[in-house]
View 1: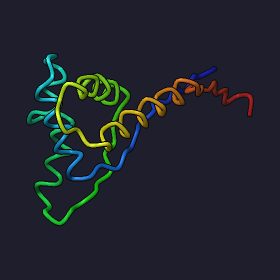
View 2: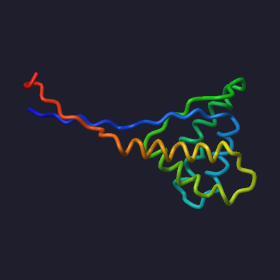
View 3: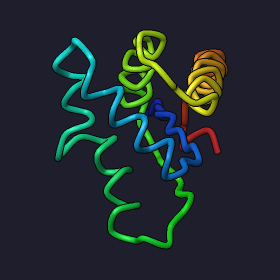
Length: 118
C-alpha cells in the first residue's frame, strides 16, 4: 500500500534582544487582532521575548517558527514603515523570511512510500 509522507517546513531565525523588543512593539500596535495576540502573553513573539527576560545574559536566541507563525510575522511587519525608528534588523528579517518562504514553496514537501516495493 502506498503511503504519502508530507513534510511541514519550520523556520529558525536568530533574534537579538533588541529585535525581539521591536517585534513585540510592532505586533502590539498592529490593527489586526491575530497580529496583536502574537505579541501578548501566550503569543509566539511573546515567547521569544520572554526568553530574553528570563535570562538577562542572553543576547541572541534561535526563534523557531511554523509556516503560520512566519506568515503572521510577515503580516505584522507590513506596518513597520508607519513606525518611527525601526532598526535595519527588522527590514533584514522581513526580507530573509520572505525569501525563505519563497524557497520553501519551491520545494516538494511530500514523497510516496511503497514498503512492498523495497
